[in-house]
Amino acid sequence: MKSAATWLAAVLVLFPTRIALATDYQANPSNYVSMLSVLQPGDTLHLDHGSYTNQLNLTNLNGSPNGWITIAGPSGGSPAVFLGNACCNTIEIRNSSYLTVRAITIDAQHIPGVFGVSANGGTSNLVHDIEIDGCTFLNHDGSQQTDGISTKTPTWGWIIHNNVMIQPGTGLYLGNSDGSSPFVAGIIENNLVKNPIGYCMEIKYQAAWPTGFGLPIAPSSTIIRNNVFIKGDGPSPDGDRPNLLVGGFPSTGPGSLNRYEIYGNFFDHNPRESLLQVSGRVSIHDNVFVDTAVNAIVARDHDLPLLQAYIYNNTIYAAATGIGFGNAAPQGDAVVGNVIFSANPISGPISDLRDNVTDAVSNAAQYVAAPSLTLGQMNFYPLPGECQGTALDITKFVADLDYDLDFNGTSKGAFAFRGAYAGQGSNPGWTLDAAIKPARAANPPPDAGTDGGNQADGGADGGRPADAGISADGGNPGSLDAGFNSIAASPGCGCGSSSGTSAVSVVLLALLACLRPSRRFLRRTDRFIRS
Image (cartoon, rainbow, N blue to C red; front, side, top):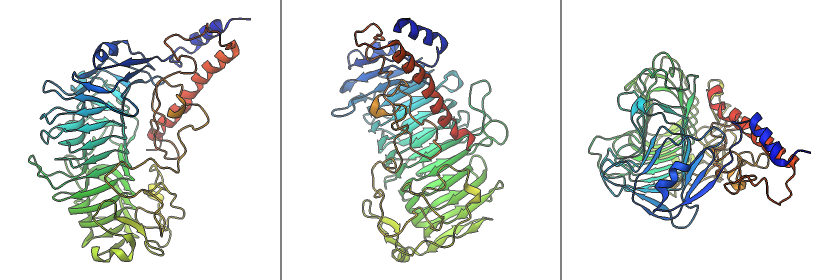
């Protein structure tokens, strides 16, 4: 009978790209720079707590679809803190892919123009499939032009989730001001951006895409979901900005059929601008909008035209205008099933306008539990018998992700409810506050109990995010710690150990490693085929 090592060698020949034997490394402020060069697909670099005074320069770190490279701070206790320096951006990403940065605190020390995470350089910098997970961004307030996260290269496949940004100049600035660096097929979810000087987040418009760069040309959606975007009352010296702005897409060619899907978010307060401004092709549903002196939602031509806008099942409170169209959307519109408390609920040229509940702000208490401008106290869950009617015709929206789930992630059932909540009485979900909106408790962990690919059990994918695309049931992505840990708990494969591992066991483990990524690949591509 062949030895276990022989069997494993045979499997590695048959499936060379399917298996990543991962290594965990430990680093500290004195040696982390030298450790970066040893990282291979599937590896994790664990950073000790402490202050890191040099830039985290992530260059030529290319994992694989089945073996992401991970750089992670401590999972608890004192953090790993990277301190900004006037020389350069704190974390700079160049020519890297399938790379996760997790649980790091980035402190810009109030220095103007020092970005927290940056990928710049236009087409000279090939960066894609990047995960920024569970990081904290502090003191990026040196100017309105100081960004927490910035991309100024054509890029795709970013997953930005579970991050906290407190008073940045601009929270997330994705794309370039001239439209030359499209941000494509990203997921931005479960982040808190509080009191920026300018935008909480902006995704820039897209001019004609560069050719030969590898951008995914199949129609796709960028997903913006379950975030909390809060503005303060401070001045914006470089101009007032909405909480969130998304720009348009190329008029023809690659990217022209792409969309933004914006849902499950909480937008709070803007004293001088709109909460959300959109152009291009957008779907906006099951969000809560509170307190703006202008529009809760404005859809209009901006750098590029407004082409399509579906706005349904949102709850809006205390906006000068609830939903405003600055001009018609020639590829289709819908304003359906919203609950709006405003003196001017809906305005502009809209062809499909139906089944909305509108009333004055002063009458909101007749419909919802506790209308308020106070975080932690406001509650817009419907009172018994309110905010409902005959079933909504949702035919236009069935291609949208989670079109059938409300703000809490609850099924909308027969689509009788108006607004962001499909229920009445006591709100079973999250309290609106200046905090990260938790992942939906109703959804099971990605792959729970089936393929070992979730964070709790170590996974066999070498650190790539579980459900990095959009799962068919709309579940929020989890994250994986790097490691083919069942085989490679140490730098060696352990095949010659005395543990009694049989050849059959080794082959089975290897084959499982081959099969698991295929299931994940199907879920990842779901965001392309459903858009």
